[in-house]
Structure formats: structure tokens, C-alpha cells
Image (cartoon, rainbow, N blue to C red; front, side):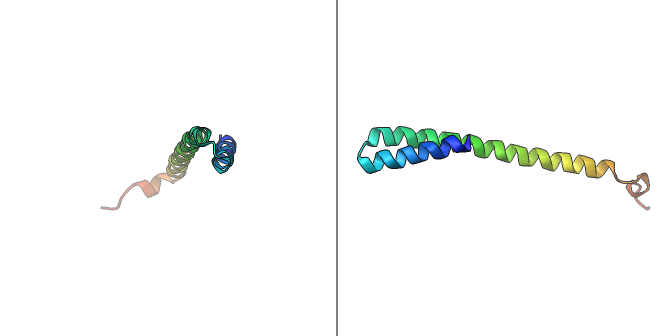
Amino acid sequence: MLKYALIFLVISLLAGAIGFTGISNVARRISLVLFGLFFLGFLLLIGFALLVDRAIESSLLPAATLILPS
């Protein structure tokens, strides 16, 4: 997905340099949408990895450390 975002960004830049502003605007919007989707997916994966790490870490604690001294 990031690859396609970069491809559309290059198309947008080239079309803008040549003077095709309509094509440049469409390619730029497509590039921004694809990059946004990629970034959201990346953030979701980071959040999921943190949740899994916490679950594994808490399951490896010995039972004695879970009892608080009174």
C-alpha cells in the first residue's frame, strides 16, 4: 500500500510539473488516502503488539509477586 502511495505521489509531482493540474490533484488525493490507510494500519499493529506484550508479560509473573504485602 505504501508502494502505491509513493507511485501516485510521483505521478502527481510529474503531472504538476508538466501542467496537468487535474491529474495532479487526483493523484495527490489518492496518494494521501493510501498513505493515511497505511499509517492507520501501522498504528493498529503497534497497539496490538503492545497489548500482546503486556498479556505475555503478565502471564509470566510468578504467583507470589501478585500478592501484595499487607
